[in-house]
Image (cartoon, rainbow, N blue to C red; front, side, top):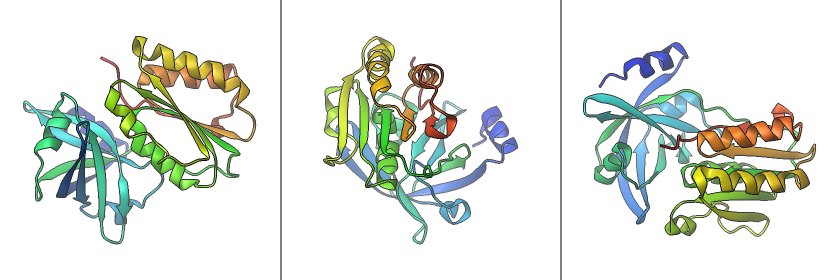
Length: 239
């Protein structure tokens, strides 16, 4: 399957292509499906870092369709990793539901970059949702002793069954129901940040693109948060 103009652009940006093979599948819940993959040599070629993600390519009635997913449990020595798929209407979810051991999917690695801040922050401030939950867990695991405040937006009652942080006592997870296309989350976080942001905190934002831009802009302009203490990436676009 060709990757169309998106694939051509990623090639120009030095994206690396690989083919992953499904090892096994596991239904985590009614809303979450996990697939384990062999990596086609990717982890040896690229290395790993916290919040690492890849672009998977799916056929959508003859047109290429790509979505980004965070790696879980990457094992460079074994050449394996897992990916959690949120189950909702869509080509990627449909593929994941039906995937069996031996099935393959094409992937591109480009754009996934993150380095643990140095010196370590005194506190992590994290904004995300079910799409970025695996990345949030990866972030928290990369700095296990650092306390975190996590605002986690949910749009379905079952989203609360898989909150980030694994219940760690030094993490404060605040569940925010999605309302008005993310406006409630934006207002909740904007009210809280001025009392929490200082020169030793680190702010990480990964939710829908509009919300991510709004909160990142607020942190830069109103709170004067320097770029080395802010990481923001829109994980999806609201329809």
